[in-house]
Amino acid sequence: MSTNPGAYDLRDLRCLADPNRETPDAFADADLPASPDEVLRHTQRDELVRLQSQFSAVGALPDKPYLAGLPDRYGAEVVVFEWLDFLINKAGFENTGNALDYYEEVGWITDETRGELREYMRGFSEVQSFDPDRPGPADLDVDDHVMSLVYIARLSSVR
Image 1 (cartoon, rainbow, N blue to C red):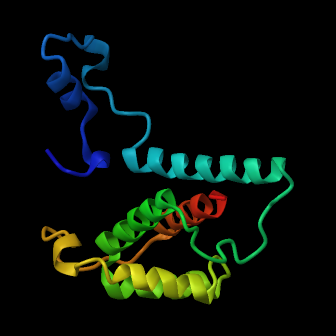
Image 2 (cartoon, rainbow, N blue to C red):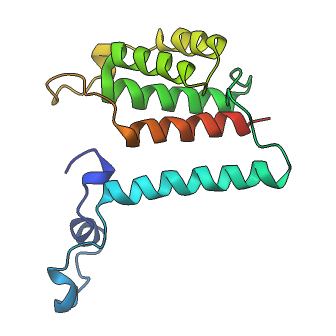
Image 3 (cartoon, rainbow, N blue to C red):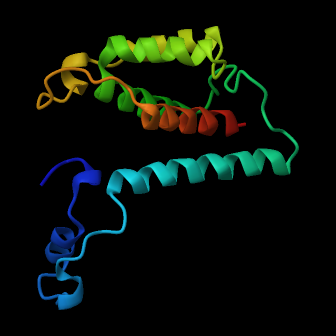
């Protein structure tokens, strides 16, 4: 079974969880209404809308740059490591650095924040964090950048 939760077959997981469970014939060969990637994409956008609603409710919708600095809290540091781990595993070190440059260029983060994130990147080992089953780093796509914006919004919401 794959280590990527998006690649799990729900029917197989249900069988593993309860081998005696019977699946009605009508659902045995039915396809899922949406792919796991599509569900993740909708979940990311829903989280952005929730965070925007929370900011709007208190009259504090952020201006650009959205993330002027990294919060100095343990929980925020965990989010930073999750975000960088996601980017590095998907795109490698060079493309992650390029993505951070891009996020600064479009005004999502400040130059200072980019520098702090690059310092955190020093704690990662490309050999350990890179998936050996993939031939090389992949380019980040729109969904990956949306995921980065979700991480930026999470970090911006930490007070």
